[in-house]
Image (cartoon, rainbow over the protein chains, first blue to last red):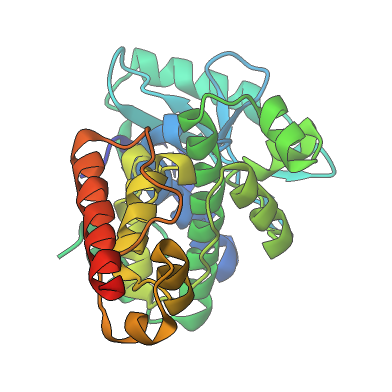
Length: 129
Length: 192
């Protein structure tokens, strides 16, 4: 029984940003990403050490997946109050300590605000395998 | 059937995918168990680091689900610090995934040797050992100046060479007393 529900933010013009980004990853990267998403969903962030890291922007975390390419999709808790859920806002990578896209945490914060204003702009996480 | 196994059934048909997925699960499981075991023992990262001879920042890295460069030697040091033993085994994907899915705090906790029920009371274990062991001919001979020949044909409850241990529990004390009496009786019989 999953501990937390996982959602994807749906951009009004561009659709599911997380799904689009995941589709462009290598197979091995997608496997590692899905493993971490399953761990987060089944066990939550409290049990798994370091699965989410703060980004320096309030309420925005990065899901950490190590490898040749460091995957750092931007995620937030909820954002509904008290709900056991996480929502992917957009995909991102970390290359030489820089985000790609460069302003990923702030972009994610804007998307989170949009989601709070329009709570139906999210769907159950669409897995890309 | 497991919800997760059901979800992975199709994805795991691809060899590269299933190995990458399982490797990442393994990283997650090891890091999580290190953290859970440390917290179970009320240890800080610093105190665990001291016990393993590592630096705290190193331990912090090992307690990160993204870490992947595990070495048996580091894990052995951690096992020693937790007073546990390390077990490494090869698993089928199904059993591995079921372990991953059921991995909760309680499932990851382990008791140290000193709290291990099988080894907890050394006195009982020792007493058990005495019960099983037959006294040697030399012990019997020394016990009552019995001839070696007599000792050969007498079987006795286990002997405790240095009398009755005052720390024994009442039931153990009684047992020990009976044993002493049996030895004395045999010695008298042997001499007679």
